[in-house]
Image 1 (tube, rainbow, N blue to C red):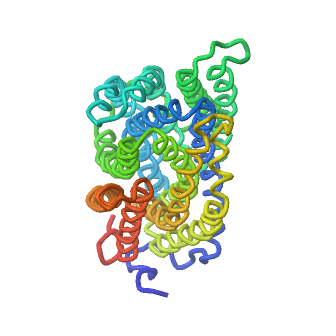
Image 2 (image 1 turned 90 degrees about the vertical axis):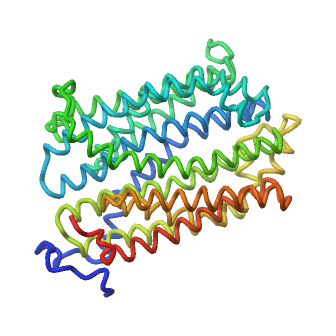
Amino acid sequence: MSRKDQTPPAASADASQDKTFGDHVRATLVLGLPLVGAQVAQMAIGVTDTIMIGWLGAKPLAASVLGTQLFFMVYIFGAGLAFAVIPISAHALGAGDERAVRRCVRMGLWAVTIFSVFGFWFLRQSNAIYVFLGQEMDNILLAEDYLRVAMWGILPSLLGTTLRSFLTALELARVVLLATIGGVVLNIILNYALIFGHLGAPRLEVVGAAWASVGTQTLIFLILMVYILVKKQTSEYGIFTRIWVSDWPAMGELFRLGTPISIAILAEVGLFHAASIMMGWIGTIPLAAHGVALQIAAVAFMIPLGFGNAATVRIGNAFGKNNYLAIGRAGYAALFVVLSITIFVAAIILFFPRYLTSLFLDMNNPDAAQVLAYSIPLLLVAAAFQFADSLQGVLVGALRGLKDINVPMKLGIVSYWLIGVPAAYILAFPLGLGGVGLWIGLAFGLTMASIFLMWRFYHRERLGLLSS
């Protein structure tokens, strides 16, 4: 056993009776698989939008890439505040402090509501933002039409994410999965009706997809809220009781952890959004192909994201109990599980890129063949960077379980923006590799992030991360 997995003298007595590594692998799978399923189902909402909009043609698809990515950037920044609920609640549950859980979740709902006002305003500036970034005007106008409707979904999306974080900390991942699946079903029905004008609905095309997303996010939030109010296991926390009463110390801790989480996530999401902007400089067909490849890569990333959340919960609980042996085993168990699954995911992307891309296209459209041809090399690069992306996704979650937020944020900024974005630009334009060069640059940034984060988690004791 390495020195990192030994128990310091201050650790709790139950550390000596901790589960074996195999037990930790099984526990990670029990908690992580429903979380992965919920993440995949959540991602399926965006995937169905992309598939159905892709059937309209390359131009609507390219515009939707711009619109959905700007919405996602705003959402994900606010979601950092909601994600902070997981490590704070996990620590409190490990320490047996249910009151702290209630305070954290209440203020989480406050925080994302306040943020939504800013997010709503920012999305209204989409036209000016994309003009400044040099995008084609036809794509800008379509993206603006999409966002004028989609921005109404920012509040229910963030409220639902906060409740999902609370349920994740309680290890009630199955209800999150079922609620999200319900949202996917509704989204498919609404997309079918509103994009193409079926079931007696008007044909709204890209705008119809926006209305479908708003309805879907609202449904997921309502399902989770009703569950928390009705079920004894969750209602006893009194999350919604006197919710109008402020709790500034709890709000302060939420922002202290949530803001760096938001910046770290935004740094990574911004890496891909920057690639979308640069791909838009190349042309509409490359941007549409980039959107398809990005959706496939994003679905694959839901696996490390789900297990990363499981690692946050399990490591947070162990840290709250001062069980340092369990911290190491829980972290490495999550890495083992994710890397094992990633082998199969990468193989699927590597050997079936044409089939995966064709799911997003109507091959009767005259530009579909061009989008397909441009997407395939991008997916080959995506297959290669799956391991780096999986590593950094799980390690971020593991370090959050230790409430180690600020340094990983800085490492992400360096990896993505000082390494990844410049590499993508240089490879794409000065070196003339185009879209493939952009994606190789993304892979380079993700690889550097995974190396930095792995070093930090391995040296957690020496770096003082196990100090409460």
